[in-house]
Length: 362
Length: 229
Picture: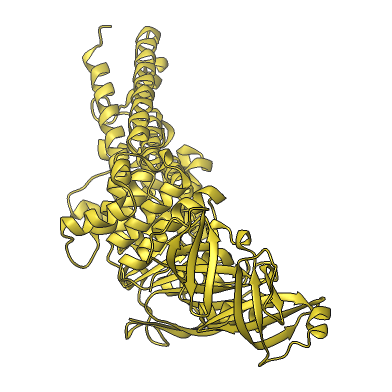
C-alpha cells in the first residue's frame, strides 16, 4: 500500500513544489499555516487540479499529464477540519451516505465495528448541530471509513477543537491507526499530534519539502529543529510498560535503558511512544549521583547543531532510540560535547506530560 | 360570496395559468439559478441580464415582444402552430407570459438559496464517492428546498397578478383568456361594475394570503426536516 505524490502548483506568488512517498501506517504532513499542506491534501483528494504532477495510489494513477480522476472516483476518504457533516441528515444518515457509494456492500458487523470504534452508538439520531466538535469529527471519521477508502486523508482534524476535546479524540485516532488497515495521511501543524500518531513525517515549508523520514528520526534530527520550533522540538521513544510502582511512577523500558514516569495507565506489557521535549533533557559527562531525577540514560552524542540564538541542539543515540537535547552553546563548549562522546542524558520525570505518552502502534 | 359564472371562470383560469406558469418555469429556473450561482462561463452577464429583463421592461413591451415571437406569424409561433400549439390569444399564452414575468423572481430566490449552500459540503459528498447528480439530488437539492419553495410562491403570486404582458399577448376574452386582473380591469371599464370588481379584488386578496400562509407552513416543515431548526 503506497501513495506517491509529486506536485507543482502555483497560485498568486505561492509556489508548491514537492514530492514524497507514503507507505502503510500514518504519514504526517507537517508545517506552519501557509506551507501548502491543505493544497497537497486537496490535490490528493481530487478537489484541486495541480498545474503539473503525478499522484498514484496503490499503483493506480490519479493524476498525471493525461489523467485526472475525479474526487468521487478516487476512494480517498477526506476528513476535513470542520467535519462537513450534512446538516439535513442525522448521524445515522450521514454514515449511510458514506456507505452508500462504497465499492462493495458492507456487512453489518463491519459497519458496527466502525461505529463502535468511534463510539457513535448513542449518537445515531442526533443532528449535526446537536453534536460537540469532537463528536462531529468522530462522525466524519466514521463516514469516511464507511466509504471504504484506499487512503484516509485527515486534514487538521483536531485543529478546530479545544485542548480537552483534542485529548478526548486522540485515543480514537490511535485506535483507528492500530485497528483499521488503511494508510493515513495526517495533516497537522501540531508537533504533539504528529509525535503521538505518525509513523512517517514530511515537513513542508513555503511549498517545499524540508524534511522527510521516520518520525523518530526526523523529530530527533537537529537539522529539522528550526522547522519544528525550538520549544516543540523533541524526540519520540518507543517504550514498554514494565511495572507500575505504588508511588505512582511506572517503570518503562526503552532500548537504551529505563525510564520512570508518572501517570501511566496502560497495562504492563503495553507498547507506548513517549515524546520527550528537547528542552527537558540535560546532559552530564559523568553518571550523576545524588540527583533527584530517576531518569538517567547512557547515550552517545551523534550530532550537534548550533542554532541562530544561544542554543545548541544535541542528538544522542540511546540503544536504538534517539534523544534530542537543547542546551546552551556555552554549556556545549565547556563540556566539549562532540559527536562520538559518551555521556548521560537526564530527564525530569514530571516534565513528560500525560499527553506526550500514547499507545504505541506498530 | 356569490360569484357569477364568468367570475368563477376568471378565478379558475387564473389558478390554472399560475400553476402552469410555475410548472413550466421551475426546471429552467433551477438550471439558470445553478449556472448563475455556481458556474463561470462566457456570456454569464448576458444571461443574467436576459433573465432580469422582464423586471425592468414595461410589461406591455414584454407582451408585445411575445406577440411578435409567438404570434401566428412569429418565428416560434409558426413552428409551434405546425405542432398544433397555439399561444397567442389562448390561455397557454397567458401561462407563458406569466412564467416569463415571474421568471426573474423564481431564479433569484433559488440562486440565493444555492449560494447559501456551502460548496464544501458538496465537496465532502464527492470525496465520499457521490457523482455530480447524486451530490445535487442528495445534498444540494434538500438544502435549497426552502429557496425553491420561496421561488414557487413568488412565481405563483406574480402569475396571479400578471396583467400587462398577459392582456397584450392574449387579450381579454371572457372564459378563454380573462384572468382575475383582466376581469377586474374589464369590470372597471363598464358602468356599475365596481361591486363585482371589489368582489374579485377581495378574492385576489384571499388567494394571495392563502398562498403566503401555505408557503410559510411548508417552509417551516422543510426547515424542520433538513435540521435548520
